[in-house]
Image (cartoon, rainbow, N blue to C red; front, side, top):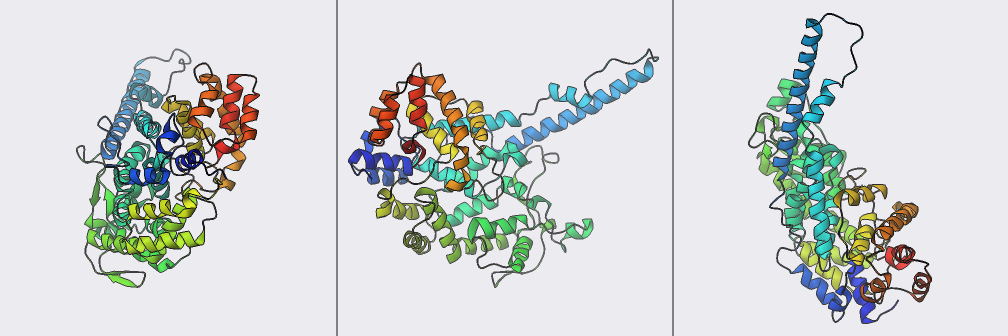
Length: 473
């Protein structure tokens, strides 16, 4: 592996950031590791200015209000059509007209799609504007770890990331965990809004019961890891603890619908046991206590450490480095900034050769950053969907996969997108500038020669974006 200053700087930008931009390799070449560490200490790292964006609760109410108005108009149109039909004598077959529901949808469009695109644009702009992109990468990592799906709750998908992920990516893990598990989007996504304690007031009145989804995923995916120290009894006990964690319905609460609330009528009364510890009745504090203990559990430290090393360094994370990060996690009470500092300071961080295949979102972002262009959110999110990683739409609560096997079969789609993008920008982007000024020190002699023999700018750009050096980090 090339160990020149340029090559190490490029590796730092690719491995821990979102890929080089014009001048960024030269900007950090004197001390790549120091530049990464400095970004961790930057005030408000990961924050996203969002004055024009709605909060998750506001977006939820906006969509709910539109849906209610659409239903009302559909009913009104249906009644009017029926009255008209009864008032007029039959004159043969009536001409076909749009169904009342379709007509109502045209009059009252669903605002959810535009809310989603506005949030996507803010996220994309932040990724393209960042100097290195380490904080953004952490946002993406934790957003995938604690994923929700826009297919189930589109209105909140972007605001959830802004509210529950971004402020906490460099904070103690217990604060991040508390923020995501109490966020209305997570409670809705994992069905805790329909969970009732069997012996709660609501459970007895409605003869409905427990939903284990949120409790199971917190234990299995968010904290301890799959098949570790918990049992099915722990899932049930924790699910009972979490009953009552819900959100205010928009229809009944026009001012506060969509906000988190603890509904004591849904909560299973009494003490509950999780991982061998009994938590006394305490309403919402009972759940907070369990989350706090899970955040500090040794299994959580190991699980988080392994995922971080796998994401940034290698599909097969070096066991010794995972153990080092896990110790740091425990010694610092889960301080995520300190954990990342240890990872970046490790010798392996900037010495292991680039072996990680970029996920589609990382590759598309690196491509746009290298070319120095902007991105239309509709085209950008469409491209990510084509590549199998639709924004805020993971295939399951596990999130999108983070290993090569999940993405290598998509190279044909990447070639199509690289060709389309290259065609669009070839008139104003010179591939030689990208090679000499943006990707200096990253390209092999073979790639340089292949791109140099290209028959057109478009072909040169496409070859550059599809090169092994550009695909891996």
